[in-house]
Length: 167
Image 1 (cartoon, rainbow, N blue to C red):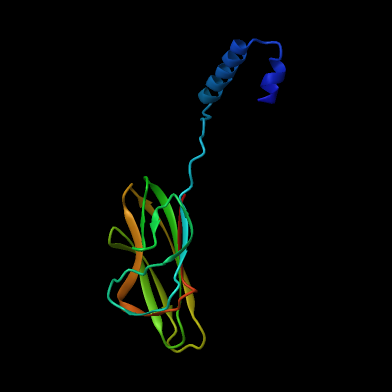
Image 2: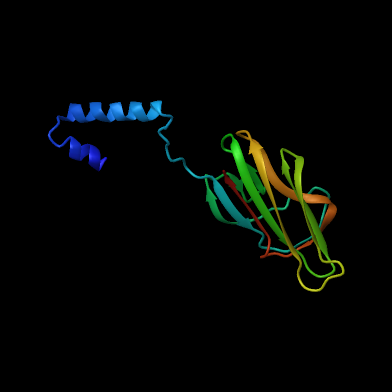
């Protein structure tokens, strides 16, 4: 823009607008598009309390939200609802304790997409695992984390996370 102003310092406002529109038409003709910044969609949540002995396919509700740009994650239900079509990237981390396990899956509208198995049986300490999924979603589609089978034995509060963002 400064070059455009410098070159057109003695031009009328109408001439500046005409030149700008001409440059814009040339750029568009070469394949450059006018890209507009979009509002981000991203969330980061965590589990504040320890979960034990969850039922089959019970939703894991990550209740503490530290980021929720676009307000698409509901920390009461534990469900992310796509506000528009696109590809979304999700990551979740589960920590269990020695002798316990916690197996989860990420689901799209109730259909399993990927698994996460944290198994502390036969181990000392606090095993942790992280899983990731990129999911193509339509506006209104829902994604959440739930137990896989009856394997929701122990998830340690304060060390479990669920996050996502539109790519």
